[in-house]
Amino acid sequence: MAIVQQYLVPEEAHFLGSAFPAFDKINGTNFPVSRLLYDATNIESAYWKIEAVNYASGSWACELIWYAVNATTGTCRWRVAVAAITPDSDSQDVETKALATAQAVDDAHLGTTSKRLHKAVLSISNLDSVAAGDEVWVQVSREANHANDTLANDAALTSVRLSYSDT
Image: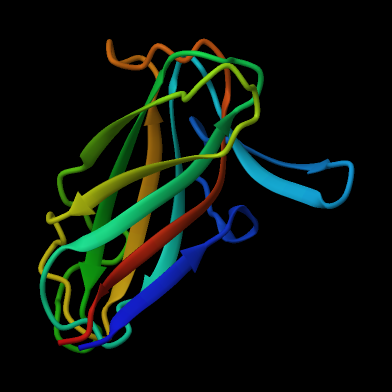
């Protein structure tokens, strides 16, 4: 059994016409940091398209690597949803395909250091009948208007890590 890993970065994100996080790059002291800036009051979403390379079965593990731009306390609520289409098999219109029900995770800011990297972890079991070789769209949202989201500042997403079994 092997684990397939997919690494999604801000530079490869796609957006709808509204309600999306801003892409930004900060020149740190020693290296640049690319990020998506998710608003503190609205739901914003970014999208990536991947291939379900060697997917066999089971849930996907999802790690969201993020930090608070200025806040030092609070909880950030993230949502992840997927949509899958099997080329040459599914008759679904690609432009009207719906996402599977999103799954959410609340991740609390640890400590009193602003810009500290955090890792929110969730299991994605609503996989829209994904199969090996499928085109898969991944939506990552911050549900900033949810009661559980108390982070009073932008959340900067630096990467998304997906992993699943190939057996």
